[in-house]
Structures are given as C-alpha cells and as structure tokens.
Image 1 (cartoon, rainbow, N blue to C red):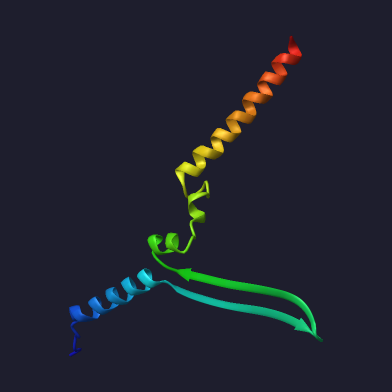
Image 2: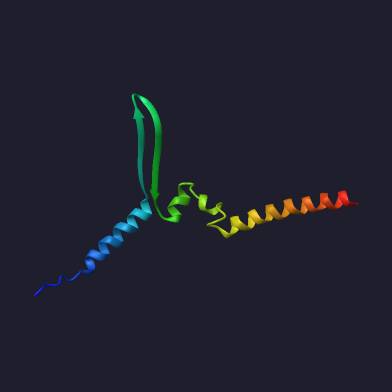
Length: 99
C-alpha cells in the first residue's frame, strides 16, 4: 500500500506569503557572462532580472510597458495617432502637387 501525504494549508500559505513579500519588496537578480580568449573580450552579456509588483515597479520609476505598443492600448493609440498624422500630411502634399 502506498501512503498518501496530505498537503497542509500552512505550506500553501507560506508560499503565498513569500510571493507576496517578493512582489511587495522586489528582488533583483544580476549576472554577467564574459567570453574571453587570451585576454581579448569576445562577448559580454549582462543579465538583469527584476521581480516586483506593478505598483512597486512604478515606485522605482520603471514603467516601460506603458510605452510599449504591444503591451499597452494607450501606447498603441498614440502610435496610431502619430502614423495617421504623418499620412494626413503626406496626402495633403500629394493633393497640393496634383492641383
């Protein structure tokens, strides 16, 4: 017979607490990878990972997703407005040339 272990709610609570703390405080993981041959640097890769809640990231001045048109409808609308304005100018120039 196999014994089944019961998962206690305290384990789930502890994991939830840890996740809440990490998101609330934020955590940074950083590392650099360098490839060198005979003291000649061929490649450097800098890795930076920040795990935080959206509110915490905004507190730190990080809000790049708000300006990314793939992630933000406001950014997409602003991009489209800029493209529309450029197209309208182009149309007006072409119409002026035709007259």
